[in-house]
Length: 394
Figure 1 (tube, rainbow, N blue to C red):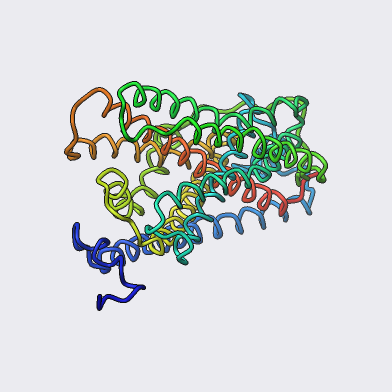
Figure 2 (cartoon, rainbow, N blue to C red):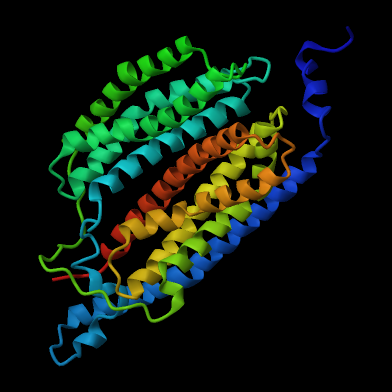
């Protein structure tokens, strides 16, 4: 044959539908413009306002003039210096578990995309991507345990063994239950796509023999690490939160704003991924996927920081779950998009088809929620520590 060995896959990668590379570049260009716009918005709003507030607050604190009105001295987010680092009031352990699991999934996805982009994972080796994802996820269990343990220690949690165990079992357990349910149905229907029992056994061995011990190792390292230091001291009595004055501060509105921006930034590439995943077509442009993945993470971080800042200005110190849910809400838009996308999928309308499609999309979108939520929460934590470390508090 006159076809070179390095080009042997070109016919399979282009025969289904010709998609010019310009389509991906146009999408990425638009996404980059969104990131630039958000960055400029952050600079114009946050940097300008924060610099003005911090300078004014520190000047008044240095004067220590008792005749100054207290409400004039402290306004907005500065009033929360004794409450902003108060641990989450609802499900603090679950928050740590979510952040640890999100970090594990984020590093797994990033590493798998990078390996695919540089050519280590090829479509010529069927199943290589899934095997790599499983191995990477197991190895990054130490990161999951470390972050969840480190955060749980920072919020003064006491049941670290339970926190670590939930971290090790939460995502793999839910995924395994959904997968096993679907696989059992496929097995009894004698479907060719059902996973052999031996392969399932190997996954369980990797989970119990490698992943769980690594999670406990990471949690032990997280609890042995120095405790996170906050720039301010938390008071014993929580400050009362005033009711929101505008609909902008409503959590539902924040979730819509924070979720739709990263979803729009990745919409085009998401379409190609969905097409390759459910229409048996090869996906090989992982370089574009890597760029879009980074853009989504940056977009989630920027939007969440902006919304958290406005929440603090409204004197609401409960930002932990707010930052996580608003940043992760892009996964909700992805799942809604998958519902509409299913209508154009030319598939049988059997019950099994619905179970397979929406079962796996539920797993994918849940993982997206954890990844993006972790990015938003950790970025918000860094942002809040940074701004409160610049003010002088007695």
